[in-house]
Length: 380
Image (cartoon, rainbow, N blue to C red; front, top):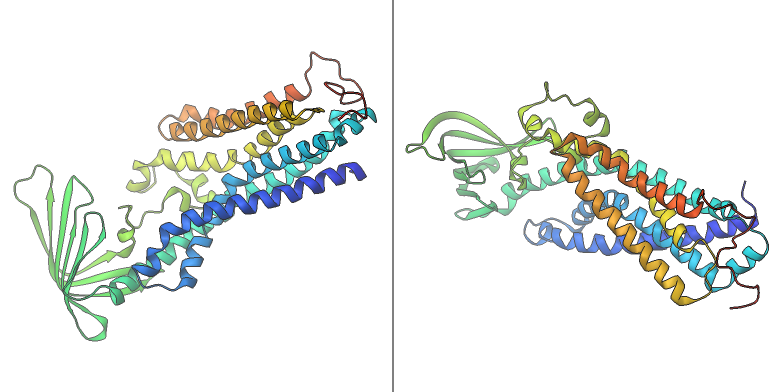
């Protein structure tokens, strides 16, 4: 149980964390949202759909921003206690580092649970929902937005054209060319086509036409005639992955159940990305504890001069940024080298251990109070 002092510190830190999380998330969200403005301007969608799509990115932002917001909250709280000379009074009253760190560890536990929930469940669920929404948007785009007689680039190297609109929403005289894969060019020509929804997926069904495929290095293209041919509208997304789910769109249980030997070809070819995504979700919450302890290690002792506190804050920020950047680098490395998964967990755990040893050095006998650098009570 926490006493009055611990509750005061916990409340101060919690308010600082919420404020930091809100401000940082809002800034990043606005910058991300500006990239999706074409949902309204280019594809004729409503502001409600725009807010829905951009709002669903918030769980992914929280998983990255929450540890940084907690780090800022710990620094703010301890700097406030030092600046108001409250840390000096606590030291003179015999407050031990173990007692002072208790409310920060409690706050770190709350934030760790929040990040774990976002990372393991909310983030993949939100990305799956975004995929479904954008798939419907692309269906609306083909049906209602594209003007007859126009050649429209849906994605770099992906061109769509139809001659005119027929009855029942059918598109007549369809021409599609897909150059996104530099190794192969696909061209579709059909007399007509309609969009349909089946099993929560949207398809463009082409009727009476042919497909021309030409691989790199081939002199003559291959021609395939068809009566009906279905194109999954998910391939208009710009990633070129068709209906294959991206790593971030799969649930955690799905990632844990993946088997390279039984997975589909698209998943097998990118199996390292799925493996890295799974371990990133489990390792992400560890950065919460690491950043909280790094912040406490910097300002957890009484410092009565602004210069001393400023240098400690700069050092803590440098360590935090280096640890987080190294984490991103190791995550990318783990897609190619399975052995790097040890570093995915080892980096944040090393940050936790290093900060803990700085706070409670085993080579120094701990006294009953925060005595390191503590001045005489009453001096500012």
